[in-house]
Image 1: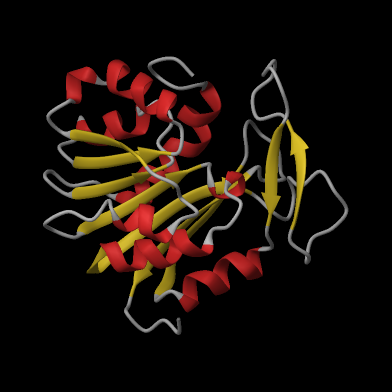
Image 2 (image 1 turned 30 degrees about the vertical axis):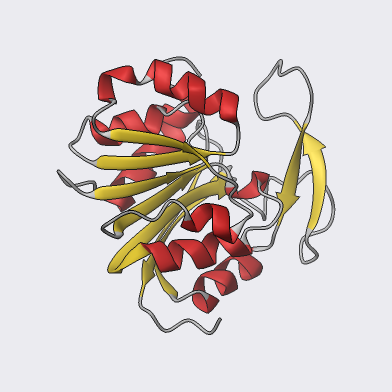
Length: 212
């Protein structure tokens, strides 16, 4: 990925995510499954204050080293996106204005704790933007309605295949609604000139009316 992320992230993921995020100076933002911290740094460079977390201790250590220029604006933490208590430990003195998750929803075994936690951590008028592999077009199996997992490559040449967790759009959107969000932004994007999209980008705005 390097310091600037790869072409797929720069050309397909980042533009629409950033359009929906509308980062403002001094906004308090949660970066979910932040990886090497490149998008955290992108937001910090635009004036945001960021709490960024990943499950991997090694990845967080590398992110702190890579993004040391933004040490005053980014707090890197280790947390488990499938564990509600681990996530709630990210709570700070003020609520988060926004949360973002770039290309990780399909990598998480159980996303229900994450969506519930984000709803609890966000300000009443906050929103959550996430980009994920498009479940309609990018699955490597013949099943769509039934949640399942399968193995594939995220980056060419990676040492071993990773596990993807397939969920239908219906399941993902219903979880948004159940945790108090309304969807008010949506894009489908592809790498290059393909007609079929590779990813979908969703903005879920908190409205406090979820049925837990």
